Amino acid sequence: MLKNVAAVLLDNVHPFELGVVCEVFGIDRRAEGLPHYDFALVAAETSPVRAVPGFTISTPHGLDRLESADLIAIPVGDDFHHREFPPQLLDALRRAVARGARVLSVCVGAFVLGAAGLLDGRRCTTHWRFAGALAERYPKARVEPGVLYVDEDPVITSAGTSAGIDACLHLVRTVQGGEVANAIARRMVVPPHRDGGQAQYIERPVPTGGGRGIGEVLAWMEHHLDRDLTVSQLATRARMSPRSFARHFRDETGTTPYRWLLRQRLLFAQRLLETTDATMEAVAVRSGFTNAAALRHQFVRMLDTTPHAYRRAFRLTTPD
Image (cartoon, rainbow, N blue to C red; front, side, top):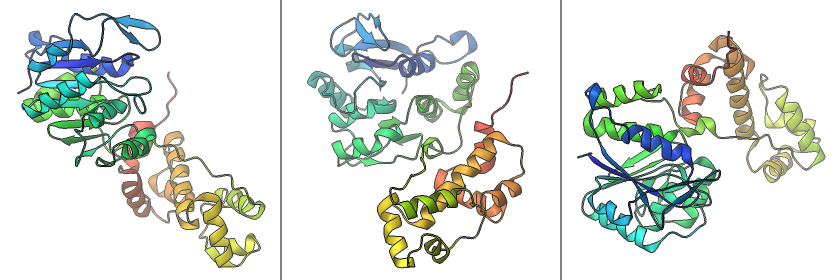
């Protein structure tokens, strides 16, 4: 059942992530033949609640409103990755799950669910920047940093910001069918389902390399991604033995020459897909992947999406 929905507000709530929940569940669309949700904003402590970047939200509802909710949504707020949460809220979340309600977090709202013990033994996710902190703070949680959302019914967690849309629409699709989810998505002017996961959004900065020899080789590798490079060739350029080069390379970059090169090739391929109309074969050759099939294989393996899907999502266009 998905009729009664409550969004929990903690101080310094982020309005966009809260707005995602309000947009999916808080708008009356009965005139369009769509389900209506009994929706409420709930203050976890006192009302009004502060929102970023400096306004307040007033609501008459307190934690007692959660006792009747089929779904409790928790949007992100400032400092969720290290702050403490009201014990009364954590108790209410545990009681809700025990009686069969669902809980859904957006971004680092997952830390609230972790504090309630609801991530223990479950797969979950959060914004990629805080996935490590979530796993460290709640070691019993099985954190998956590369996905947009995880449905471990009755606990649903989503990645950063707009991934909350994906999670909410997924829940609507699961409970009320694809036709309802698609209709809501059309109203929101968003895709009803996005390809891939959040791995394609993760920043992978180029290591600078502290050592002179390694730093020079890194710069040279970055400008020759289309070449067939071997450790022996790179070691010669660094004026080291292959074994010494591999050791120094890992010390400087935290990874192997092969993995570093693969990541830089993927980054370059992403830039080509974003900024050019080059064919997939040309993108593959220019970024060092031999052919389009090899490019697609690494995209799916490393970024959980295809080059075509990535280009559709990120292609930079100039307005008329």
